[in-house]
Length: 109
Image 1 (cartoon, helix red, strand yellow):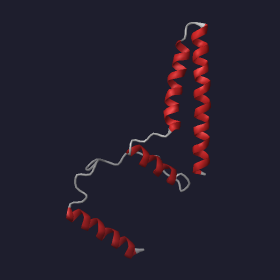
Image 2 (tube, helix red, strand yellow; image 1 turned 180 degrees about the vertical axis):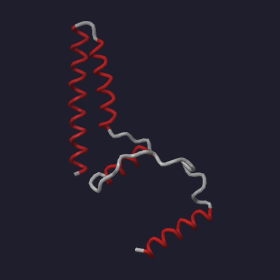
Image 3 (cartoon, rainbow, N blue to C red; image 1 turned 60 degrees about the vertical axis):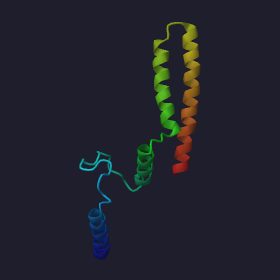
């Protein structure tokens, strides 16, 4: 274990000396607060973090935002016609959200 740690420290020192670690995004800033990762969720958290840094949003998250907006639209509806249209939109989005959520959970397990 000690030799592995020494190897890592040597590689870091080598990278610092060559300037590879200079100018990286977030340099000089504290690490962001993240919930403590357990061994079960560490891989999921790492995957989500990589996607977020790449600017990729899973369909489930985009649908969640759409659902929130549709709920506000439904709450603001003043006529029966508007409520029916908003309710149809809500039902469609909720179904699509649950399908995407279930697919992600099935894929991750």
